[in-house]
Length: 90
Ligand SMILES: [Zn+2]
Image 1 (tube, helix red, strand yellow):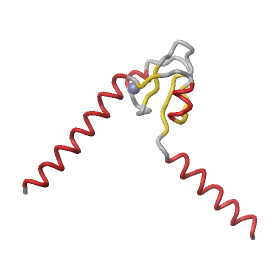
Image 2 (image 1 turned 60 degrees about the horizontal axis):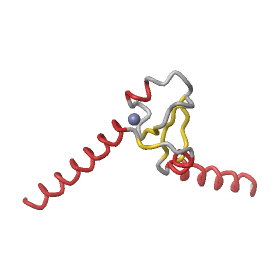
Image 3 (image 1 turned 45 degrees about the vertical axis):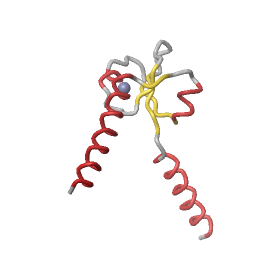
């Protein structure tokens, strides 16, 4: 019974960890970028395996944030800011 609880706790912890922002990399040694979205069109070009890693791991491999993902990310942030402004006006 105790083991089951421990297992449950452990899987909860690992779930929480995996919910932490992970990024996607192409295992192509030439690939220099990591992606925020698994469905990124740049990542679709990858002929190698796509691997999910933490942002720290990707940065350890000297990978940089993909331009497309970066644009999408800042666009999303802007959209959120716009929404906030609109809320304030009302
Ligand atoms: Zn990307």
